Image 1: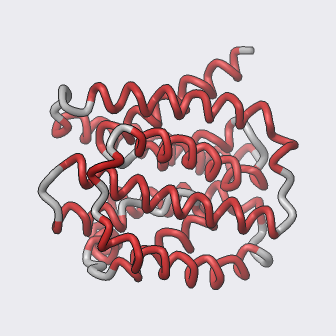
Image 2: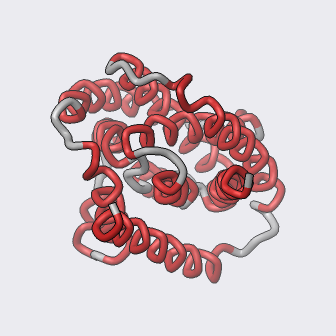
Image 3: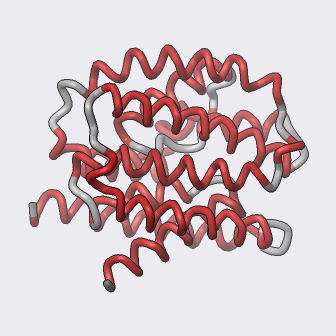
Length: 240
């Protein structure tokens, strides 16, 4: 029971963070899921959870979508899904949690690695990498979000467009894992908990977005993600 409550609360927190800051929620969720589901289920369960989070967040900002970015992003997502799906067939599943942790630590603290992501100026490449890498690491970081923040000044437009992009990526990931034979029904109860938490978090995040100054909290979020990444890495290397 305590584990169920913890999973629900963490999903709510992750979706609330994404609703306020348009980032951080997916990274937080993919870091904590290995504590609740086996390695083989981390990315598929994460995809369904983020689908619920992004779609419910989109409901509150649907009219603000920046449509010119969606077409190239979708095309890149199709290509990225096709190429990275082949990698999943040969990737040892026990290495997924530490790979996720290492990737996120590099995203947070390695400036050259982060600069490579931030300098992507093509929505096609953003879709290719964000959706393709998402099949492997779950939450590949704010690739498209960085580009949107450079081109759009309206925060609601950034939230809505990024949510739609990530929603499309979630659908591609779910379809890929269905094709690979993953049985989502085997994890129906964790999915119920995370989807319910994600929807509640989207509502809370939408209410809080205009009331919270993100500067100080983003620093706290960075340290929280770092702590969870290190915990996941140590757990994978020392206890499994």
